[in-house]
Length: 141
Image 1 (tube, helix red, strand yellow):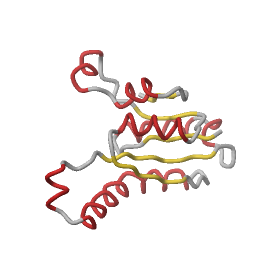
Image 2: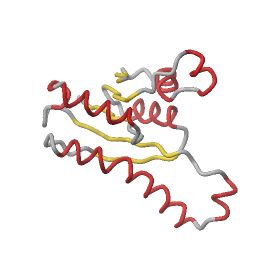
Image 3: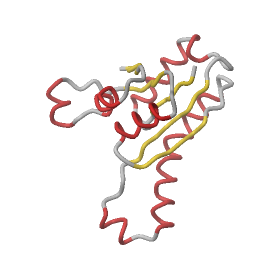
Image 4: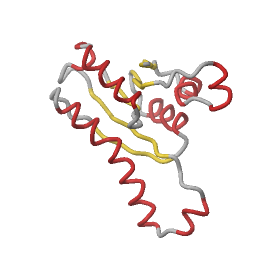
């Protein structure tokens, strides 16, 4: 199975990884193909304009590494070497687009578990993923 792990470095990513570790059918080495994906929000246009292209790229690389390195280490403990990927843009739309275009079988992601009012006010990455793709999504709360 081709699995996309949507990660952001939060407590909810840690809970998702703990869930994986507790479910052998999801974490068995060699059984699945994993991609760990983090999506960084784009810097505001004025900030990007004030910085060199190299500085902007370095910033995105550093922020992505903070998220992906712990995930990579965790999976290595289970003899899994994921493809690590970083993108820039709106998280929900980007995750959904990648999952659809690259034909993933499953998206696994942590969710903050906001109530209906919280989703209305703040939006939700998981809600955006669910709304924008037909790939099955496993939400870990």
